[in-house]
Amino acid sequence: MIETTTYLYNTLSKQVEEFIPNEAGKVAMYTCGPTVYHFAHIGNLRSYIMEDVLEKYLRFVGYDVKRVMNITDVGHLTSDGDTGEDKMLKGAKREHKSVMDIAKFYTDAFMDDCRKLCIKKPDVVEPATNCIPEFIHMIEVLLEKGYAYVAGENVYFDTSKLENYYVLSAQNEEDLQVGVREDVDEDKNKKNKTDFVLWFTKSKFDNQELKWDSPWGVGYPGWHIECSCISMKHLGEYMDIHCGGVDNIFPHHTNEIAQSEAYTGHKWCNYWFHVNHLNTKSGKMSKSAGEFLTVSLLEEKGYNPMVYRLFCLLSHYRKPLEFSYEALDNVATTYNKLIKRIQNLSETGDVDEKSIAEYEKKFAGALANDINTSSAITVLYDMLKADISDASKRQLTARFDEVLSLQLTKAWEAGEVDTDLSAYVEKMIEERKQAKKEKNFARADEIRDELKEKGIVLKDTREGTLWSVE
Ligand code: AMP
Ligand code: ZN
Image (cartoon, rainbow, N blue to C red; front, side):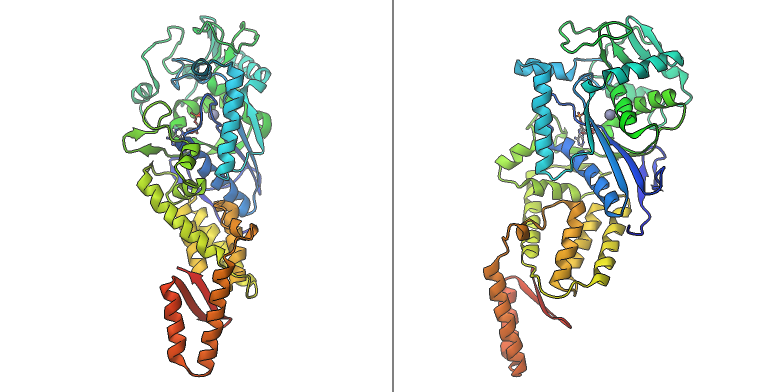
């Protein structure tokens, strides 16, 4: 356990707060998973990368984390409200396949993208279609408690029954309503504008493929109920951190809180972690308009997915981030230089435990400040420049990469160390040492300059001469 106090911005309180989990040493964490009707765009993946860093940081400092994620394979309509078409059905029509085929294909594609971006698979990944009995049970309880009603053969959540429905968002009702609607279809069954569907039976989509029997007739669940049920199924009634992109704040997370707290009768989740959007120059990233930016597309264009991960880590998760190929090119150069530098760390010198502990603390400290990933990367650079042995640097690089996951140590593991360069530099260092011994300082300086021209910097320390690639 690394002694650190973690501070996180909490959307619930709208301020940075000290993070204190319900149970000491343990973290129950939930992430809204992808809607598997199409490939994830790199904007969606920004959210998963930053959530991955949060999880890995918590593990790094010693928490026992259990992370759960759903897969939305039913119920998410093209508008985040209850209007529009079912996204899964839209995907199936587009590709002339069944909904389940689409779900399988795009779940696998999402997992592939995560693997490429070194995003750890959550401990539990549960598709919504696995949990129909749990959804039905929760809806039955909500009806019994008077928080839900049946109208026009659908089951709705009654938001007027709550004292503070807008607990998560500061915006006013009118703004939010406009924001979530793709069309202005008013659902006449709703008692209040903000009520939402828990279970559809009177589907307006005649060809809805996935339907299940329920006490209210054959139908399918609304989108929000799945996250409440799936998280409680695996994490119980109390949760520490719930994650998602900022677009999930309203209505999705607002509705999740409404139904979960109505169901349990107590506060459900203490910290809400929201990742801001990745945008293009022309605005919001989209799967339908403009270039559909996927990890595979970046690979086709010659980018290592790690470059995109670093691009995300160089900015703070709460700030909007603008994507451009120029910016990505700059990060590619940065990444390649960094890898080269690490690749050429030799295994020489003793591992200095004091320095290891000191730098681990600095690194954790940067992330403890509301997951400040760019500061954590600065600590990595400072460490690489420090007067400590290469062996210590190697160990610290590997430790930091448990959180950064930038494949920083891949070169050593694959035995790809540039042995020619290492051998050459070591030979020159030996020659310089000899020159100094013979008081031939002009030759010693000449060697230093010669190496400098090649981008190799020498540093004389008590442990001998260390070198690094600029
Ligand atoms: P979806 O597959 O639409 O359910 O979205 C998956 C995740 O990506 C959710 O957490 C969204 O909030 C998030 N998301 C959607 N668009 C973006 C974006 N442009 N930038 C960052 N995250 C996003
Ligand atoms: Zn969700």
